[in-house]
Every structure is written in C-alpha cells, then in structure tokens.
Length: 107
Image (tube, rainbow, N blue to C red; front, side):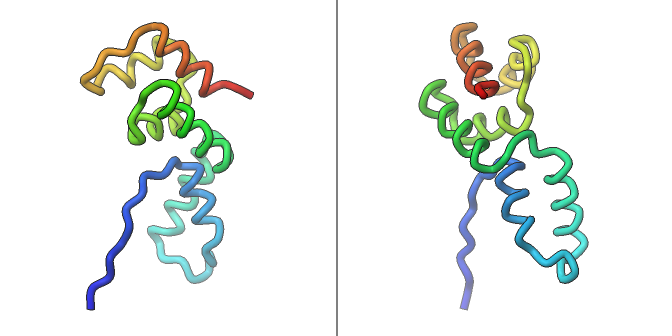
C-alpha cells in the first residue's frame, strides 16, 4: 500500500501557517528548525502571501514558482528585482517589473 503525497509550492508565510499548527513537543528536529526559519523569515501573513502570489501570476504573467520566489524575498527596488529575475531565462520589461513591485508593496 503506497501513499500518494501531493506536492504544493508554498510561500514561507504559508508554510509558517501550517507549521504553527504542529505540537512543538512532538515535532522532530527538522520540523522545529523549519518552523523557526519560517517564523523568522516570513515577509507577510499567509493570506496576504497567497493573494500576492495569485496577483503576480495573473497580472504580471509570472509562473507560480516565480511568484513564490518574489513573495518570499519581497524585493524593494527595480535593481533588486532584476537580480532575481535575471536567472529566469526570460526578459521582463521595466513596465512589468514596476507592476510587480506595485503588487508586492500594495498595502
């Protein structure tokens, strides 16, 4: 009997929300370290991260993986954003980069 596991791409904030539900007393070392990391490095709340990810996919034409990367990092300038997007094998216009920054830093 084999179990099928579902793979899902999550932002750090979404992973943090899931990990907050575990009993830390019963958690193994990896779970504890992952929870510690997610708590320290989540840039927003899980609901906001999900909304940002969806907006980046629909309004800026990013893949889910690209959107998650940017939500996790939350770059603050065009130059910083270009550093991360340069490895994606596609060129993004300045207009698209500005749109991405606007989405990431809305509210």
